[in-house]
Image 1 (tube, rainbow, N blue to C red):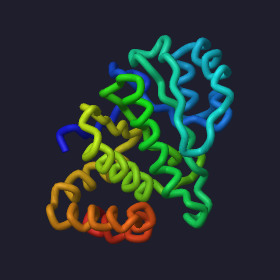
Image 2 (image 1 turned 90 degrees about the vertical axis):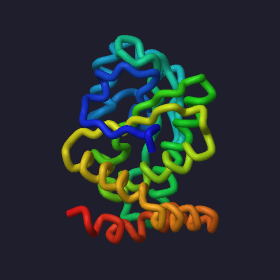
Image 3 (image 1 turned 60 degrees about the vertical axis):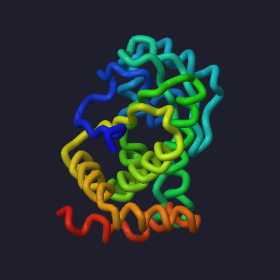
Length: 203
């Protein structure tokens, strides 16, 4: 768990190898964290993104970070929430997994994530935090190359959810139950289905 950090910060100000951008499919900038990253990085980021010719939901692409304090920006496109019946959980988990795989390919071992899809795309924050944390936790178990993953929270609500998950994941019984679900191949759907139970002691 020491490889996962939770902070309340502006992701554009982080000095780290890579930050992740919650981008749209065109990769041409937008609102929220996407717009903030493009503004801080400067116009060369948009030029670099044009060369990538877009990105599909769940996939990830990389550019230099230009005027940002980070070295790279990894762009990933989260799913639009449609009630949870269109494989949104699986797609969101892929955003984290593919971003981490791309980081390793580029010898990036310290990476920071925003809360993907929780803004204009409408993904419920509790579910999104749970899916993100679980996807990263499982990835780190089999990829020792990644030394640090930072979840960058934009408000106290997200910060509280992530810290609650840290406490849950430290419990042996809960961790063993989740890893058993992973073996059964139903971890993403189980996470969304049972998110209310996971957070029942958080409020």
